[in-house]
Image (cartoon, rainbow, N blue to C red; front, top):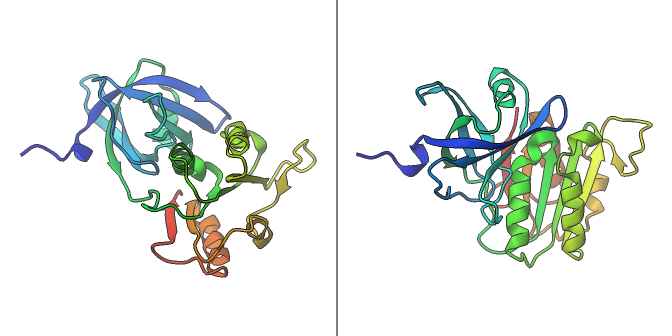
Length: 244
């Protein structure tokens, strides 16, 4: 009996590897077969390191930063180096082969348009970038907002992209980044950890908001508490994807 499509280990070729900071890099790849990879915005895959025989020698779960609605049919990942596997992925070169297995996950957009709040801590922005791009390309009729809390400005790896998307949306997409470090730098935006004032500044209709959270566990707990105070908790309105 053949494997379900999501369990098939496909071979992909690295098309881009860009080191953005000492800890963060972007990896893009395309299937060597040339086929389209069917997935939903917000889902994740296993990336496999392969030996010379094309066999898997290590794997890890990574959310897709790309959206299936984008014209360039590459699979794109924003990755933070935190162990041996991610360090090995960072050493790949354009043309190297890796394995892709998936997609998996239900961290996806609601079937019917509703107000959306995306809350990211650090590299937790990865699946949220996919969801936001998909919603914008689908001409989402309800307001959307992103709060992104990161340590330093270089770690806001999609910062200029989100600024441009917000401008193009004519007020339908609001972007609020905040830094927890870099005191005294030229940064003129918000500073500090996620707090109630950030949420209130959005003026969202909390009775109908769907919230999407992704980040480290302490960040996630703070976000859930703040949202619960505004009546957003549990399924189907609270969506979580955790990064360690």
